[in-house]
Length: 457
Ligand code: NDP
Image 1 (spheres, protein in one colour):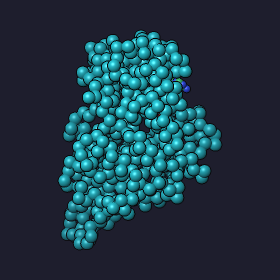
Image 2: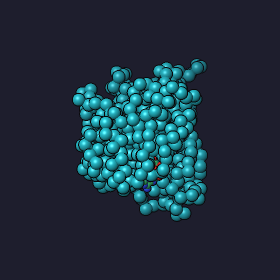
Image 3: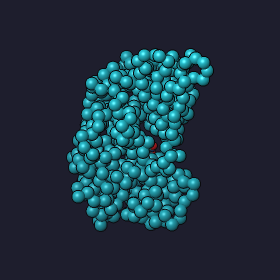
Image 4: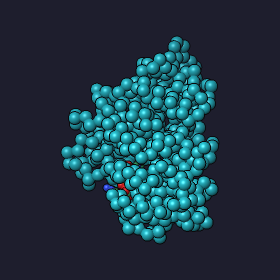
């Protein structure tokens, strides 16, 4: 039987991810009575327990309008710090000593991927890998070979059921909503195929640049940072077959199965862009060829999806921040009722997956007047208004990992498939195309999709 973790260890506790996402998640879990166990921060910085608590409070304050002191104090009582170097065996010995009463600690590797190996080996050396769980952040490797290498490193220390690979998109309720929408509604599933769907567009737009992390970003780029993981996860949920059973492994199998059917991306159907001014940012090479924007066409080689292009794009410094999927249906077979001039006759389903998530369905209604023609009108629902507060992704993912529940974590094979798909467009030698900040990327990207549906910003 899976038992709940009885300690949480955050490697890299001084970092950006812990302060932006993990402290607020721990606070929410404490509020929901899901967390009352030791939380140990580990870092090279010489912080003491009080500094850790101060930082945690600051993070929680930034994520919440007000702090409930009773809840925060409960979390603070559980916090403690270990400062040490990851190459030093005594760091792990001190940790093992601190965890002597914990039977199932969970280790969160909120550290740069280059350090994963030493930490995993250090944990194994003191026997903690045999009884613990490990959470590994994306990016999971840099390509197929390094992703397999990382798996070997993890696998040498942790049994497969102890490894949790995070792509936080799988933890977002809005993204999980795609799955619920498809399989809990009889209405659309019969239409969910190449007979009725013309094309599908996925846009993950960021209205901001590298936010002071240009040095890190320049070694990664949009394909590795977003397309390989978040966007392909969304594609999998949109395109997958219904799982054979209602259980975790059947779900993960359906997800992997559809990715196996995706053809490798082609450089000829890919446009890479870089916003003007990027090369002047601190930490960026003056001749950097790193893409801050990528648009591409993906195909799924299956009876359901043959002939339906999936247009994908993501980028920084675009006109706004939004994540959207637009499913464009085919035009009615016999145009008895012409579309009003200047409008599209296709039905659209627009899934908004970012803030203000919801669905908009564009249907054809009769235009007013003597003429029998139609024009699109929107049926729209805002899930926040209709359903109330949903949980934050990191809150759910930590909760799940503590329970040993893998539903919202990627299988090793899924990640390998994602790398296989993007590999032909990684590190392309052709120069990136420049685009102005605040635009939708290079002009060639527009031509690729023959017209993108602009997201609701
Ligand atoms: P940071 O760059 O903020 O690093 C986290 C901590 O790791 C630092 O505070 C530092 O702590 C320690 N560290 C940095 N460099 C080294 C090194 N060379 N050797 C040992 N320790 C080092 O990372 P983030 O918090 O942004 O990200 C953590 C992980 O999560 C990464 O794998 C990242 O890719 C991933 N991730 C991050 C996201 C984010 O929004 N930030 C989103 C998705 C994934 P100290 O010096 O005190 O030891």
